[in-house]
Amino acid sequence: MDRHKIEAVLDEAEATVASGGSVAPSGFWSAVTAVKRDPALVDAYADRMGRIDRAALKNWALLTLPLWLGTVVAVGATLIGLVLVAWAYSLQGNTAAFALLAGLGIVLVSTHGLAHLVTGSLMGMRFTHWFVASVRRPNPGVKVDYATYLRAPASSRAWMHASGAIVTKILPFAFIGAALAADVPTWALVVLILTGIVVMVTDVFWSTKASDWKKFRREMRFAEPVSRTPG
Image (cartoon, rainbow, N blue to C red; front, side, top):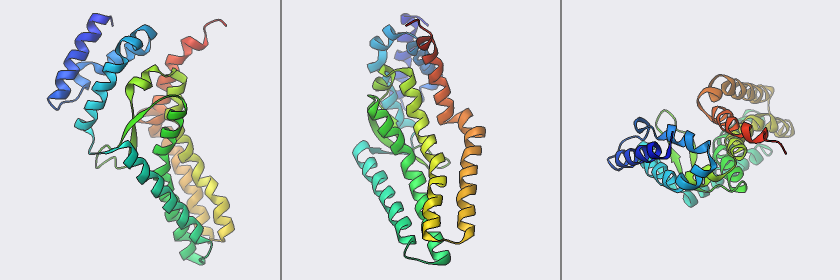
């Protein structure tokens, strides 16, 4: 896709977003792919694409929060989850198990987006909002500023996407130690192990096709030509 075509696509995408529509029919994402392949195009179009993507968020997201507010909520939820886990140490039997599992559930949801936020920020990306995509996809997400995303190396973009999935897979197994220390009933340990297995199976059969690992693989393909360039 040449510059003339990219500019035509972006003109159409801007008009569509302004009228409340989706950027997808305009060919916006094909233009993004073309820009990712050419560093010169990134310099020319990253800011404009970032503005279009940011405006489009308001059309498709069920709920958006300013970055600072969403981060406060996510960090607060994480702390509440950890307090529940700590509380389990002072409880006994099934009560301790429920407190620990409730804490895990909260931490699983809240840390996924935080992992993206922290990893991306360390790699030079900025973020603009927290959001909930839809009733069917209620898990909170954090929206990257697409201009800074495009300017980041492809491998950095890939690992930003992977970070949330990695944290989500680690946590159920990491909590086994806490469960043993809290002396919760065996069934709670089984639930932790099954949760970890379910998360891994979900990654294999869903995330690789529609979520974080799909995006990881997509961005790593852009990194491959760079990695093969002679020293």
